Image 1 (cartoon, helix red, strand yellow):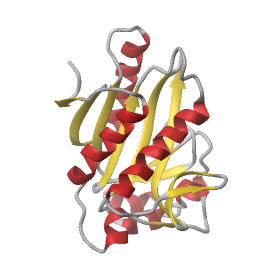
Image 2 (image 1 turned 60 degrees about the vertical axis):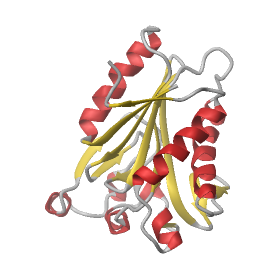
Image 3 (image 1 turned 120 degrees about the vertical axis):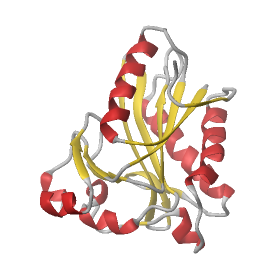
Length: 218
């Protein structure tokens, strides 16, 4: 499994790259690949999103340097930004992993195990996707699968500016808070500290060896 470290890139650029790699994976031109990155501040609206869950006006968002994109993943409204590790697996679930719920479980489990590496007891919350520490959401999941090849993925808050989540109703959930690894530990945890553990746990769930690359696959 090839893990590509892309640094901080725009959402549109990452989305276009995902679609390109998904098509190549479907065609068998590349192997299983995971993009690891941070985004510039962006609010994304999934297929079940409603505009009412974007609390700030477009003018306010623009003033704070936050762009807005409608996307084809599942889920509601979410935020991505610096300090958040985003992982976009482009992996083929055929022939024996064709189970969407199990795939989502694996993304959640990856974040739960990564949090455990930092001494944090993350878990699942009944009826809600993602990774949670108590009733505080530390990681989000949203996926799209075409011909059993995945795109989109997970976002784990390392040292994210949590005030940006006040601009939206995160994932359409009004009565829960959002947190980060840094907030829970009361110390700064960088994204690059989280990257290797997260890759290791995800690869282990798929019995895969890890290869690293700086930049997108050739």
